Length: 66
Image (cartoon, rainbow, N blue to C red; front, side, top):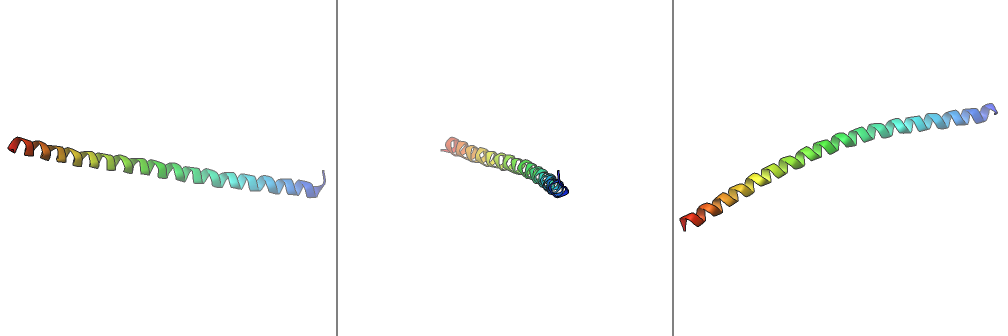
């Protein structure tokens, strides 16, 4: 194998390793973002449920007053 081919192969391997490292970092960031969004979604669901419960209570109290 000529030295030029070896140098090209070495460069390609180096580029591939760097790309993999970048992709791993991006995947970690996306996992963190996903976890944050899931928490946010759960919080919105909790708040919405609380509001719906309050509306139901109001409807129930209106029915008993009438």
